[in-house]
Amino acid sequence: MKKILPFFSYLFHPIFIPLFGTLFYLLFNGNYFPMTHNYLLILQIIIITFFLPLAFFYLLRTFGKADTIMLSDIHQRKIPLLMQMALTSILITKSVTVDRFPELFFFFLGGFISTFFTFILLFIKVKASIHMIGISALTFFVVGMSIHNQVNIIYTIASLFLLNGIIASSRLQMKAHTMEELVIGMAVGTLPQLVLWIFWL
Image (cartoon, rainbow, N blue to C red; front, side, top):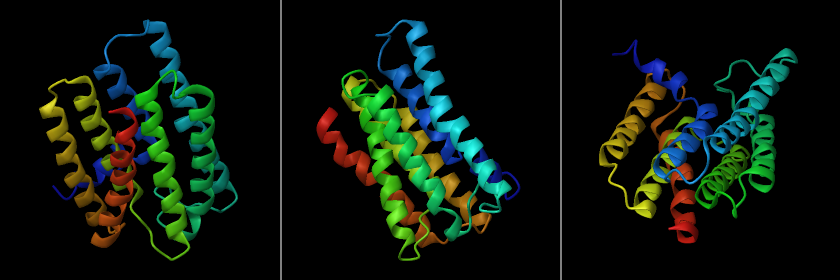
């Protein structure tokens, strides 16, 4: 089990969470859009939240500003987090807007807020777990989708809560975070999603 746990840290790396959230949105929100529309949305999400951050990471690595994609050093997190906020801002103002995709808009807005708080915490030397921020935000977005669309996806939700535990164990096993950092990460990921439920549930 100890050898398997690190795998979950890579499979559910925060860079994949926007795509996972989008796929859950399309899966549980009903088939309101043509398939070409869905493919275009997914393509935009992949470019803005995956390929651009990945390219930016390799640029930082080239200049010695980042060691690994896990960004374990607290001092190496500031620039990537600023970049993430900038890209998310572009996404929710130009593509995933509140009038076109309201539920998904608030998911990404919650992600922006979580990223902002994570950035602020760095100045008091607190390294919140970005893995826990991502998976907890995704979990409560899916819970919100279930309530909003009145669909019974209890097994999906239970699996996501189980993943929260597995990923937390993975981060502890890899000695990437303390228990306190994991709890802070879960709170930072969960609370914005819960508060924003007010606007779309």
